[in-house]
Each structure stands twice: as structure tokens, then as C-alpha cells.
Image 1 (cartoon, rainbow, N blue to C red):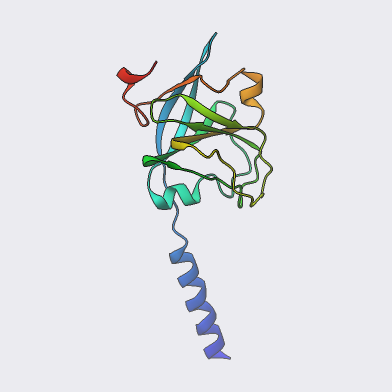
Image 2: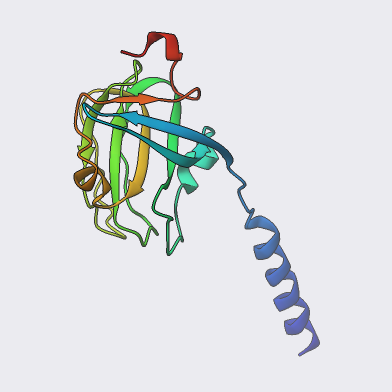
Length: 154
């Protein structure tokens, strides 16, 4: 019996020690539409580990907040909603800051990979429905020190 208790304690501590809490850098992103500018406070996922964890296990996301996934170079990017409980709008951003594709109102927990068949530098995830409400469209410009040199933005 004592051996079983020791094993349970060892397993408990090994699971808790391996479940690393990820702390994301904070930043701001501005989306410039034809008529307005919208500023979002974002968490920045730059590393492989951060991008894999993303918004998993979140139950809420404040209205003007989001997460930006930044890749070291433009590449084909597919996202999924594994362990994500919030419907999201996914904004796929080219290297020059232009919005390439928007996938609206993703289904929570959906495992189907989502994304365009074009090279992408970053993906911004915000609350589902916001791109429609704010009239954010393909071709609008994302301004962020984390994604592009602002001098090259349109």
C-alpha cells in the first residue's frame, strides 16, 4: 500500500512539473481599414512552443484582445482549434502586413486544419465575429512592430 502511495506522489509531481506554464510577451497591433484604425492588445506567440499552445484552454477573451502567431519567415500556415473553447476570427497576414485571408467564427474544439494556400508571416486571432462587426477585410493592413517594419506598410 505504501508503495502505491509513493508511486502516486511521484506521478503527481512529475505531471505537475512537466506541465509548464507559458508566459506570452504582450504587444499592440493596429488594423487599418478603409475607414478606421482598430487597436488590439495581443499576446505574442513567437516560439514553436508558444505557437503550439496558443489560446488553448481559455474560456474567455476580452473584446479588444487577441493573440498573434509570428513565424520566422513566410510559410504555409494551417491553424486548428484543439482545446480552444472560444469561437475566433483568424486573420492571416502577409509579410508586408496585408491581410491575405480571414476565416470567420471558427468552431471551438475543431481539429480540421484551417488556412490559405499562400505564404503567411503571422496569424492574428481575435473574438469570433469582430472582423464582420468592424468591417475588417482582405487587403486591410496590419501594423505591428512584431510582424513588419512599419516603414514598409502601405
